[in-house]
Length: 120
Length: 106
Image 1 (cartoon, each protein chain N blue to C red):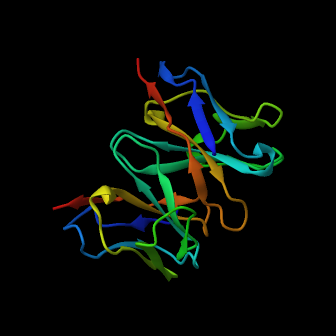
Image 2: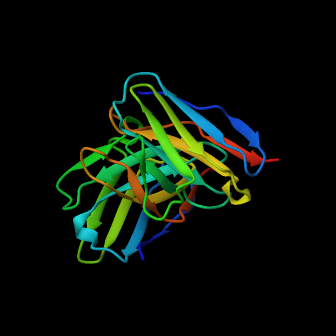
Image 3: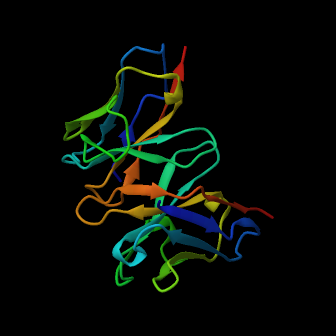
């Protein structure tokens, strides 16, 4: 059974940093692209970042480029999201998702999410 | 960015058929996918590439469309289908989601 479990969320002040983790199990982690998708309170879903199966390629939405860094450790079956210079608009539940690769790019399994609140 | 427009909410009775629409601001070929999100839960993939049923999803769910207009159909609707349904396109960069359609059962 595919399982994705996020951790590392919490309350952080604007301008500070936070690092999210996602522990994967139940599938061969190194064979799949992975992504972070966020959802602001009572809002819709927003893709944040994607990393290829081997970590060689990364993709970001414009609003987080230069502030967020997606990475992975295939030996540990773990995905990461380093979030720097956080803003109030980054407040959301962050979901880790397994992503089917090119050309389809859909998200076939999701974790339960971890909440990030950016506030002073 | 490609904007995906969905109706905010629908209300149907159990046993009925419901169609949930998603309109894209520009063509997305057939690269449209659908997700179900129940309250307090993570999204779940229902349909990929417009009309392909994801593994384990009941055959009551189906998808259709191409270009700019897409539809998710549930027939018949069951009480457990109360949820918000999101469409997502992966043809244009960046990948975007619709605002979601909240399905309520009468």
